Image (tube, rainbow, N blue to C red; front, top):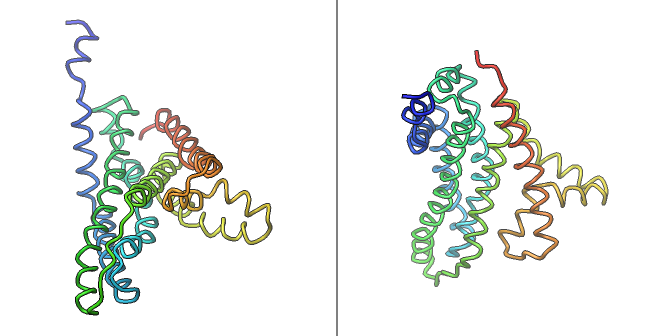
Length: 251
């Protein structure tokens, strides 16, 4: 048996890597805590908003956006940096030396989690809308724009991908989390300082450019703004992070 044949025979299937990384996401204490907090915040925010604004399905579902946009990137960062923080990267890369496959397997579970939690928020909003309508004895608004749901889910996926990119770039959870959480405040300050700052934020702030994706008002200029912010916060950091993961010495 040649070396190439032996390598091909002992290659770990990607679906097995994916299952292992998904299990790591669910088994770690930090992952469980963040997931439970997100589920709790989604339910609490939808119920609270229903008590205030009434039985409006789309409005109630959209209430979960703030908690998801804040915690989904944190979950993604911890997923990528966990191997390095717990010094298990050596074991992982001995079993699978091709590090790019491991990184790809790490990225998919958080992205799928973003989709699942977006759908969960919608499922929570449906009975809350019905209950609020019954309690208030008012007709419920069941209007839901499919493009809004797709755009909102897409925005959650993008902020999660940005967290993955920051995690791969820094390979240090505290540093990546600080950058992720402080960036929206910095963009807000920059936008309030001058019109030039507001213009820069309008092109590079992912939260701002993704708003058009949620609203469905995607003109060509909005598409260009979104593409620019995706390149700045996802493509470039992930490319640099991939290079760092491939070259970093494992101890």
